Length: 223
Image (spheres, rainbow, N blue to C red):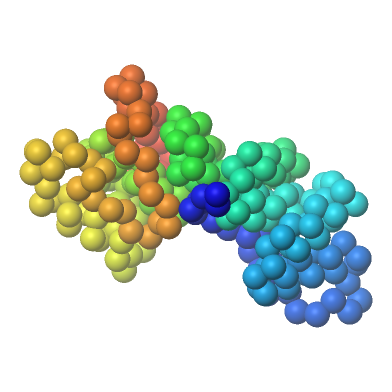
């Protein structure tokens, strides 16, 4: 059965390729794969991209997009394999890094591993709103509300009109102690198409480790 997994991000601009005349054959195949995606032919797009990476194994972009497609299809093993391959090829590939971090958190519930990747992302790009926002969601998931507020305040400094961050901050201000014990059930994060894993899925040791790791992320984010 197909899982309802949140999709990753395709390579920036990948779906806006116009025309193939005069393009390198590999680029033509990549463009064709995204034409198939736009038509809803996921299986055809996967076949095209698999053929592309066989011909051009160093294409981090194609591996990232395969990760997105397999995640959408509910095949987490294949998605993980291709996200990791994209990063192996290009360790600084920000789109793949964020896709893998979000995948580890939302799909595999590997909070510690996701946090390590977000530390890597924010060390390179401290003002990445998407990464800071996801850290806010993770803070909610592990009950680290003191740190969570700081992440959402940071988002509003970077994007004053960010509705999701403003909503969550307002909600946090109205929570009673009993509500806080039911986190994340008391808050449904906005701006993210995935569900945060509930704290019941993580034992106390894991939650405390996650709180400690989240706290270490405050420095690169300049909270």
